Amino acid sequence: MADGSERPGPARGVGRPDPTGEEELRRLLTQQLADLCGLRPDEVDPDRSLEEHGLSSRDAVALAGYLETLLDRPLPPTLVWEYPTISQLASTLAQPGREEPRRAAQPRPAAAWPRAEPANEAIAVVGLGCRFPGGAAGPIGDPEAFWGFLVDRGDGVGEVPRERWAAFDDGSPAAGQALASATRWAAVLPDVAGFDAAFFGISAGEAAAMDPQ
Image (cartoon, rainbow, N blue to C red):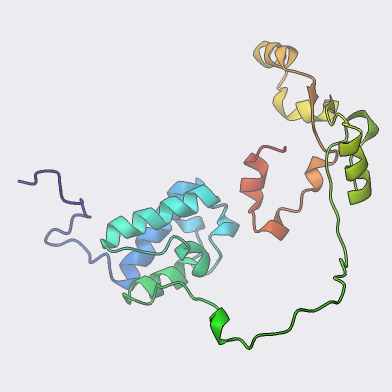
């Protein structure tokens, strides 16, 4: 009888499929992804990226932890990003040792580089941009305006656009009461729907669930 000091591992009784086999890993991953994303197993495409199924960053970490427990061996936390489809994950995990993170070529140690003389050339800043809430004056769209905002001790708080509340108002008395008691002031940016989720590698489902601030 275990005393609780050992790390629990997945049960592997007689007659159970070997979880380290590629086909069984594919089946288990399909079921896990379906559970995490609220899908049916037959809606999961093993050659489509996990992100496209709606897997959030938090659930990706949970999936990596599940696999680590299932296989009873340490796995890199970046596993799901290194191998972003079920087919890639199953094929890689079925061959222990292949799941090490793929690293770019490392630069030589600093001591190996030849010593250079100090340069006196000027450094050119090619471009710089920003976007911050500016309160009643509107959003701050360039570094010069942001610097002036700081020097003048500007206030970025303004009235929250009315359309921001539409998603929370279902017409019920409870929603009306909650919205009536919510503050109407905050530091917000206009056109929150213009956030480019794909550019940051965020799935549409995760973007929709994020706090728009």
